[in-house]
Amino acid sequence: MPSAEEGVPTARLLVVDDEAVPRLLVARAAAKLGIATDGAASLAEARERVAAFPYQIVVLDLALGEHDGVELLRMLRDAGSDAVLIILSGFAERVRQAAVRLASALGLRVAGTLGKPLRVEALLELLRRLPERGHACGALPETRIDARAIAAGIDKGEFFCLFQPEVTLRERRLVALEMLARWHSPVFGSVPPDVFIPAAERFDLIAALTTNLLRLALPQFRYWRERHPDLTLAVNLSPLCLADLALPEQMSEALAAAGLPPAALLLEVTEGAVLRDEVAAADVLTRLRIRGIRLSIDDFGTGHSSLLSLLHLPFSEVKIDQRFVRTCLSDPEAPKIIRAIVSLARELGLQLVAEGIESEAVAALLTELGCPVGQGYLFAPPLPAAAISARLQPLLEQAPARAKLG
Ligand code: G
Ligand code: G
Ligand code: MN
Image (cartoon, rainbow, N blue to C red):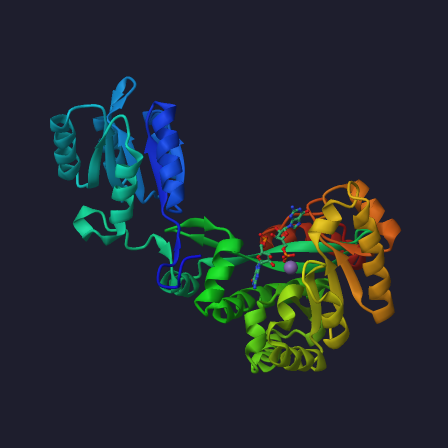
């Protein structure tokens, strides 16, 4: 895992070559350095790619089928590409140097040239040296997700929320919306949450991110809840936030500011993490609960101390992990585990939600096993706010309690 100083490498590279083998070699070499690669086999394909994504690195062959790489250089210039170039060519060094001069004349940055057949070691060396180079020679100043990139993304409002419905399995009545964070960055493109959430946690920015998202989501949610009074907003809470003793008060204030009662909010905490700092977590969770905010154990069944945390901490809900749900038709053990979780939840008076339901057959089995509420692609994927509003609107006007999603 990279250290905090290194950040998460997210440079993206485009390799333009009409031969498949060099494209593959470049992709493999780049992957070793954590750089994602796209390939283009023609000028037209390269043009499309460059229009669609601001690549940090472009590796290009000068002889490109019927086109010459010089056209490609012009295309990059015309597209306003900020990429650092690595020129790949079977031509003699003299020709390659001419291409470098032309690229520079066009205002493009060239990190170096490589001959063919491609020597992977030489390519790796060029790629490794990229970030250390001076600006004119291809610095990659903003290609890593570091603390600054995330903080700037928060400031600039690049993070937003999608909402995934939870419905009753029998009536398909909407009962909750889970807020799921997304980041669309002009520098990195769409960064998946399993990249930026752990990064934000490592850089101590997860609380700031969650606060930022709640500021966006709570007023939106209030609008929905006015029309759908029993709706719950489920928010994933990093276990790191449970170390902050001021969290319960902050949550109450955020809810009050949005005009929402505490019962509107349910905080999901991944179960494996809960016991890491048991004393602080128990303190914070208990005070949240006393304030009327509900708590859910997310991904239940994947941690090590499920039963202990259930018995000792004031949870109101259990979310059965997708892994049991998705295998419940194929793995004979999975329904037994689900049945046990159902009876445990009943004994302890906990709500129960199954996540990751993708088919009617699975929904039917879960209903039979006694699980009342579910979430998954069968009902709806995570959706933008506008799509939630659009789905709620016509149904809300007639019968708020029976809004059907799916
Ligand atoms: O949609 P999905 O890919 O969103 O989410 C991936 C993972 O990221 C899930 O485990 C989910 O719990 C987590 N996640 C999504 N949004 C947030 C958030 O706002 N805060 C935290 N801590 N985790 C989140
Ligand atoms: O860890 P948590 O339960 O918060 O993560 C929810 C994650 O599950 C999100 O990444 C969400 O996009 C994803 N998800 C939601 N429904 C389904 C589904 O039916 N199938 C699959 N494979 N993933 C789902
Ligand atoms: Mn969740």
